Length: 217
Image 1 (cartoon, rainbow, N blue to C red):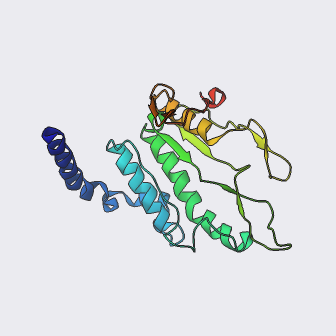
Image 2: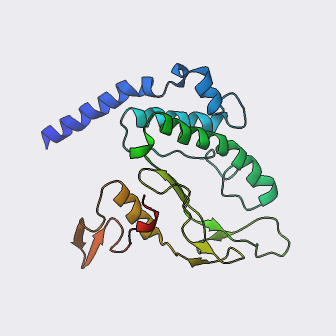
């Protein structure tokens, strides 16, 4: 126990000492900063986050999560007020930095063993409960996630919703399936780690999930 605690403290110290250099985007070229949109107020915030993500991946960090939008109930993707007014500026803030991140990973040869996942916890209804309301509600029956690099097929589309975008009707994918596929692409068999607790089995995908072999290159 003592050796394990010492090891964790030493790891934390190494992380602290390395963080300052890893997070310093001032070391990047002007061309790289422009590619990520750091010179544009509309994309500067998310561009910096994506650039830091690339720097972390480049230094061997195994898992990086990039948040879009500040904390709080406004100026983020959880917008119920007006799709027309709220979504365009959000999309504008992320499209250029995301493209730059994918391009940068590929140029540095990092895309082959880096899986990029763009996802959310739920989608949006194609309508609002109130007639003529410009906003949307939470929706779990049909929404989109995408992945790049890390062994997935390029330009491949899996599944489809109905014509109104209400329900998935082709190639339905449960979140357990998505998790199982992500783990598989990371070299982890989601069925191997199963343990029993309180009278039931548990594992990383909650004893469910199928690998989506059709999206794997």
